[in-house]
Length: 158
Image (cartoon, rainbow, N blue to C red; front, side, top):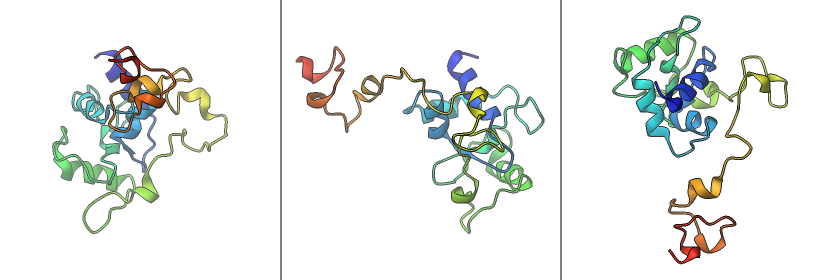
């Protein structure tokens, strides 16, 4: 697998049992905030699915509203739900994960924000992550006020 997939797998391996993360959350944690779809593609090719230590528990990644992927690669959404339920994850009447109770905060199990869990891996993009460049083509980007316009930025006359 490539570097992107390996970074996705590293984050997903850290999601504790009984918790879930969203595709977008995983993307943000690896420094690719607009790559939720590609996180899904990487997980679809998961070489080590499962719940055993060392496996990549891709069943713990869901949509931001708590829905499970209809194309869950390892048995379908019913299997994903069974796996999550076996870990204590609760669902609403429409079958969505109760995100308020089960969304992972990105910290190692037992650690809290401000704790010493930072050594276990990044909880967000690297400090030198270029948000202006990442968002330059986003509809909400305002070229005329950005601080670091790219070569193709309208601020530069592109």
